[in-house]
Length: 359
Image (cartoon, rainbow, N blue to C red; front, side, top):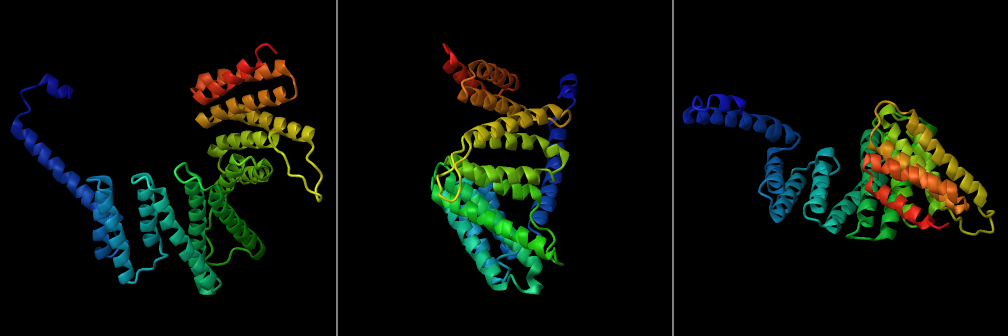
């Protein structure tokens, strides 16, 4: 652009057209090689043809009905050609279709239908063939995929457009139970040949955290607490750059302990409120200490986690009637939130300080 300003008449219309044409050819060649050939190399051409049209109508000339039609045609042709319906390429098409229905068509219930069919098919295959020695590799892959599907279904069922919390819980509990059973089996029997490539610690922690968050949303904090503890245990296996998320987990654990009310049971003593409060305070302080220790790789999650931990300490002090300490902690939380642009933190701590006025 600067060159053009300096020599405005040197760039003629003819040279502009030539350059544009050349760039167009280069771009077209790049798209053809890396997008058309690369992305669809795993599919036979009759399937790839429909997928190219599906993606075109998904991302360029956006026509949702046409996109769904071509996704459906691609899957039908794949079935006619005998492609493995549980192979990664075909599962990938189904996941892409579900994502399109959810994100672009804003039809989470239709996405749920697709994923429930995938889940049922995967579970039926594992039940029938998963015990066969020659199927170890496929079992590991399919079981991992269906656990991920279970977690995603939990997210979809809990979403504002569906709000089926019981179904969300059912899906999340199934996913976590299946995951932990497989983890326990692998630890007991050892990892056999073909069973490599299982879900890693980060994804396991994500599944546990999803269920914990669900329990918190239903005020079942006594169920969320042990899941957050397991998440933190798994988090110790993560690389250093993941440390900031540990602060979030600690603050969530602190809040869960502070709000915990264990259902009365003849088989278990009632929860000790003083002990729960002390543990909640300890975890909030651990979160602050962990955040202060992070000097490199610090991100927004660290700063927001600090603000939440400070606010949690304010709430604990307020619960115990220590208004001075509560006011100090809320003030710190509001200051940190303002510093890092955390609007929700500013609002919540400001409301808490207003609540303390005159006390």
